Image 1 (cartoon, one colour):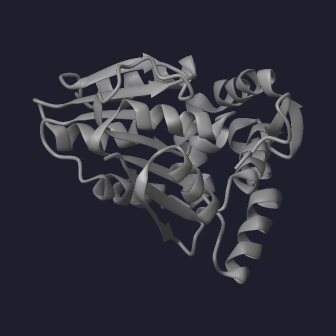
Image 2 (tube, helix red, strand yellow):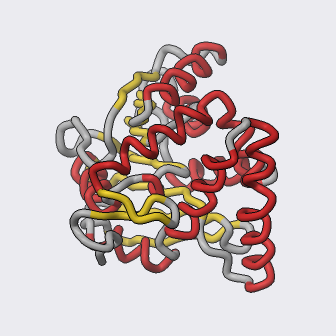
Length: 252
């Protein structure tokens, strides 16, 4: 399954851009919203994102002493939850491709007193700089839709995963109810950019985020991508009528 229109272009929201330019364009979005990221998540999810994240971490079945890689970790919500589960004998790597987001996440972890079992890495999910079979769980929450080559990122996640470990993908998805879908489209494309302008003085970034959700693969398409990357026993769980989905796949 090829999510790019051709080898030289890909989507940035609803726009077609040069593939090599997408990383810098996405960086610009998150440089702009880094200090308002939690507010952005509240606006996009009506505050329910905290529940979604807890469900995703529960589905990972991460235990004490294990190693977790949290990709596109942002302000560290999943890292916080994983840190408590793995305990002092485990480790969580909070990572992000964006320096501003990673700095915000690091400051947040320090403020929460979470310093013993957390490391930080500014990395590209498509080219993970880790040895094979290193992590018990690799997670990415609300970040895969911003990755230029999703298939490459999923293959990279599979490579660094230990046998028996799992990949967790939490992402805005496609509502399964037609009424909910129409309501969410109206909210995303009409109200969200306006609120982004009021809250963060940045309507364009919020408009991109809404468009990126619509360009993200549907639930079954993402499941197929995960299987093509080598993951097994892949499944997904819709939440809030499919507004968000958690995908899970294992390496054996």
